[in-house]
Length: 453
Ligand code: PFF
Image (cartoon, rainbow, N blue to C red; front, side, top):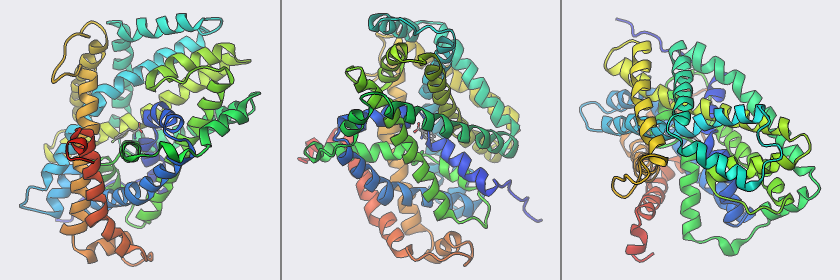
């Protein structure tokens, strides 16, 4: 019996969907802070090296696995390495996706609250202390963040139910150009502030004195999270890439776009922060307290605030749909349940984790498991353990398990494209990537110090 043709993204659709997955809270909430804190231009250089020598090859590996097997994350490993335990790597990815969503949807929900606050001009004339209070009151509130989180999860579920073409491809083709437009406008606005160039100088001035092994490892970890690697997301999306498309150039474009947004977000945020002499805070505070503070003092602050939080919501949504697709593709193909049912059941599970995460910042603040509240627990398990472990096995799988000839055929679309870098690619997937990621893993588990690094 002929196998049913798998649904394919169009060429632009594949880039929009994968870039949508990569560009997310990691680019806007975390990268700018890392850049400002860890040596500016020097950090950027280290980050670019990590992306080129680690991120890009692992993304190409994930795309190849998915497209070769034409299946979900776990099914791909089963198809390519039958009667082995490799499928567990894919299953681990599905579990990662579930846990990442468990905290990611909470912050995604906050973006909706802040769009509403921006629209109702809540930041105007508010003092720093007031904005601080607003954020603390909101994020520790029992019901309000949960309400937004549920809405965000429902939105994600709705797009996934609409399908790979009509849901994922259509929505990301619409949202990604809008996202780029907004971030470019915000970047220009920031540079043209009176002290904009000074802010830029601070941001990009290369301070190599700040580069140490800790910073290098955190750049690698950031590259991994930002490019959605190590958990089957790019395997699942790779399975929808058309057989005629050039996998390596698709991956290259996605990585470039992802870096571009991270740098543009830094440009949009930092010069503005410095123009007002405010101390840059880390992560959520930077975006949910410092930025509203700036918007409140800026001419036309209302419109900038609205644009910024819409940007954040779009970036989150295109990432959450990619995460949910990992789970839904797995459930529909492995357990043979309908797409709608799979999306609804997994969304209910995610909502439950989301409630635990949200409560752990408020009423359950004092409850901890292994020393972490639920929010921090889901974040730590995935980014510190599951994603690096997944990345190591994915590289080893492509480097050692799959036949070299088969990889060449996949990467070249059966000879259509030239792949002059095959040997370097294999060298990286066999040795460099697994070893480098192992170091990240050991470092995150606090074992590098113990080993005397
Ligand atoms: N890459 C996203 C970000 O930078 O926010 C997060 C993410 C999305 C991680 C999808 C993993 C994933 F599968």
